[in-house]
Image (cartoon, rainbow, N blue to C red):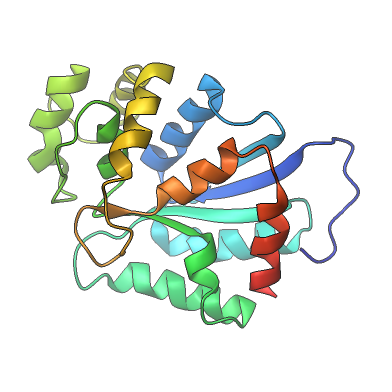
Length: 209
């Protein structure tokens, strides 16, 4: 990345722009579980909504602090207008038609698609919290899930190092096509964060130039 500032740490600094509270708290939980290679210093930014994602991404990318910046967001439902708008703006920012494919980590239709794989292989087909509340209660004990801060915190208590491995196994069976319900490409991100070889960072940034 251009204009990177000198680092006082020998760790690779990575930033993930999270769409909202669920994405932020989920990745925060994984950071706290120490399931990734310790050479990566992962920082999170809560964009507070998908409309704020492009600006947050551009700011973090341009300030030169990070070796790489990612986005973690939902696709929501067809026709994916807001999600596609994010992709378009990221591509325009980099001047590379495929830039969004490199840096956007998605879950279709929502982040629960990934989170639930810690406990079950059941497919999430709707982003509606009311539709998914029974599944959340079954595996986490959180009743009438509406995405409140206290409910998210409680749900995260059911994520462990052991079921992280189960999630990793289950998501390998999911499609990585972002317009397909039940898809996610988060496996790519997790594999990178687990990797002892950090050459993927330079390779990614070269594809963005």
